[in-house]
Image (cartoon, rainbow, N blue to C red; front, side, top):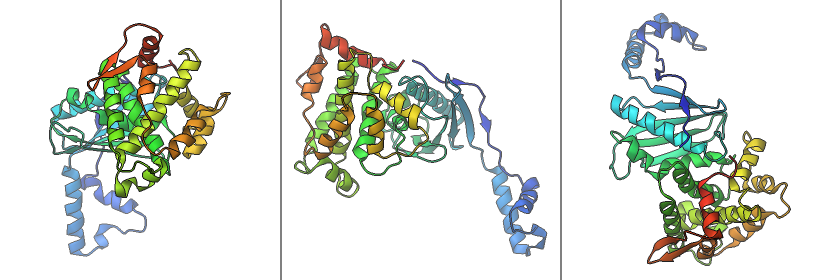
Length: 350
């Protein structure tokens, strides 16, 4: 797989020491030198500065992709030296997988923060989130002493970084952004050689089944379930309806271009146009459909928002030479459908 290359060795971020603390205090706007403070205040300040001086530093690591885009990896000091090396190895490969969409990272600069947490080896990344801003930050809470191998096999990392493929700022249509991340978390792992083609389609099938079985809200439109998701549930319906949407779009784009153009190309177009923007889903779709005679994204978008259950996914899989037998995907080995299916393991934008 492609990986981003490290161009600088790990370096600790500086923290104020006791000797420079008074100088720092002088530079603080509107504050006086500590000598003018009462004795209890001076003691409190001295204790604070001493704590800062002995506090372990956050390890910082810089990575660059082939186009010179920068990723800063910031690792909490609670990790042991060996665990820190495992985390660095994991983030290098994780970030490298994102370049397999269209050759470079979606941002000129971005950050991965890794905090240590307790937990089970069966769930090495119990929590993660992406923070949008001047510099987008993906924050992971990782169980200490987890190996890079175990972290690489966990889907959470790929899901979170895939969010960066959209210049989205979180208002409305959560199913769209979460659906893209859910779809690409599987593509990224397969393209990076971490899971097989068989496993990729098995995971997608299993996810679609979870979305179908989350039937409590059948009869309600997807957008209504989306709006109530935080309070009422329906996560599987929302996430996997979105993944269905992007698989359906990708199949249509590849089919009408004989495999030469797909969702990867559209995401590159969106990134070239609007990476620094904060777009609504409707605004993104206008860009994604621009230049195409048939507005695939807009057509499916409206029908998806109004859908009252997860659409049938078996016809989509059949177009790619995939059938289901006893809960297992069966991949045809020959024919045009099999050829189209294998093309998903490669980006159409590279």
